[in-house]
Image 1 (cartoon, chains in turn green, purple):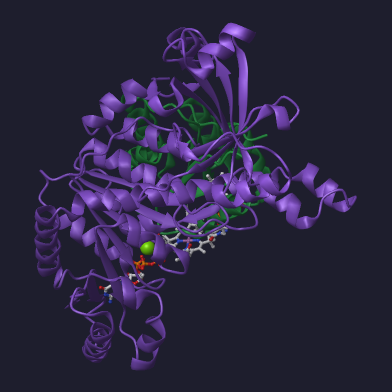
Image 2 (cartoon, each protein chain N blue to C red):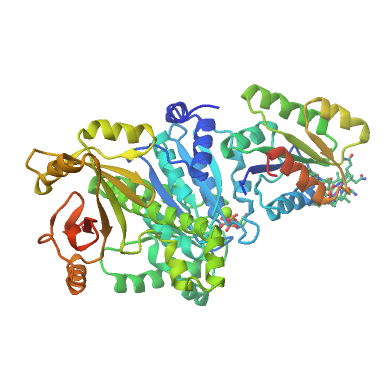
Length: 130
Length: 434
Ligand code: B12
Ligand SMILES: Nc1nc2c(ncn2[C@@H]2O[C@H](COP(=O)(O)OP(=O)(O)OP(=O)(O)O)[C@@H](O)[C@H]2O)c(=O)[nH]1
Ligand SMILES: [Mg+2]
């Protein structure tokens, strides 16, 4: 299979890294090359990383509650830098914020309890792996 | 989507997006038209898992003046089962991500070998072309990658974390032979002093075995706290000046190219193995022996079809047609001994040889006069031409004459009258040093 590269990143001052690591491992198991950036990333660092790695998708994990500001900033910088790849967001996202994120251009929002299978399938679909 | 030339143009200006796209293309097997002119110091960083490689690269790169371009390639293992890879080296370096002079790329080992792969070398070529002053290559620090890195790195840094004497003893097999600089990493740690002593003793012993040529430096460094890193950078830069002066920097390109060939061959082999279903069926049904089937994967097992020769009146005209069909063709060469001008048309594992007669009295001119343009002979490559000639004589066939110089080696022919009207050429290629 082709091996699209995906970035899994944690934005802001959020130390909850378990979910991000679970997702990164699961995608690696599914055959992806997954770059895990670790915690405390700024939106511009994540965009730079995606450019340097020629990534095909960015996955953001946020459990701190700052998702609207941080993801908004991420989408803005991506646009500015001409980076046009899908972004997924996971973590603790209140239902009322989902639509706001989707409106910003996020391709999907996945909270606790989402089966890993479902996440792998959407990443495959978005990166063109059949 | 930009084309390759545009990307190359932009990569030359340290455009990271272009560099990244080119490396992906190389990973996908695209051959890039890059002529490397040496300018980068390629520094291989190896050492056991967790010895502090990524952290040390981070600290070195952070200390290098911002007017120097720094590229970092970190290699992570691919899963042999799923092919995926969890790439975590960046975690230690992310703070450098936004610096304009620094480019970081994670690459997976991919493939059957688990060491470097041909894309790693292509990436080094791209980064050198893009103008990197330093290229740090972090290996997975185990097995095959140590031998590989020897052929691509100008300088090899071996990290030895604080360990017991017995553990250092255990390292010696692979790691202890390749280093130019040995670094006791995490030297903020209590145990580092005794590790340093044990390592010195170890290196002294290896010096006795390996002789005067090998003069590695041993340093104590803490990547995390920066201790000893300035000294390490001075040693690295000093070595680079030496390598440049001695011409070793240029000669290292040969090793890089040969390794690239080998690694590409492993990749082709792996693809071949994956597409072996027909052969598997033939082995299962007993049509082929396992050995014969395996050999078919290698187009270079001999004797093999070396080329089919076509006599033509106008070689430039003929060569252009093949070029238009998308084949790579050689420049014309004159072979006085055979009275012909020759152009080779390259096909994966064999060739078409176009022949234009040099004058009306040559055999090829007479051939065209009598039979018109068309297939002139078939050539087999043999391992040892003299041995093969004995076989030919043993079979009662006629050789046209003593072996002589052909376009690409030593050649002779089996006479068509003794072989059902086929003129069969025998070729033995000459190796580089003959
Ligand atoms: C474990 C935990 C901790 C651990 C974290 C350990 C670690 N290294 O991860 C510790 C104890 C350190 C901790 C600390 C804190 N925590 Co806490 N913590 C939790 C807890 C109980 C579980 C989180 C977890 O690991 N879940 C397991 C993983 C696998 O699930 P997940 O991350 O949700 O991931 C799943 C999905 O969300 C999704 N997903 C996640 N990321 C991504 C990314 C992509 C791309 C995709 C597609 C999907 C996806 O897929 C995953 C699998 O289904 C949650 C409560 C909860 N039930 O969620 C609180 C919780 C997240 N913590 C909370 C808080 C407030 C804190 C503290 C601020 C507490 C404090 N006052 O000190 C600190 C902050 C620490 C810091 N620096 O950020 C709050 C956050 C509230 C909010 N967002 O409004 C929560 C929700 C608890 C609560 N109900 O109040 N915490
Ligand atoms: N005390 C101390 N710890 C260090 C030092 N350098 C690295 N570490 C720690 O050692 C661990 C591994 O460091 P890395 O830099 O990831 O080591 P690595 O060799 O790149 O690891 P792999 O790539 O996984 O093989 C981390 O927890 C680091 O913080 C150092 O100089 N001193
Ligand atoms: Mg590392």
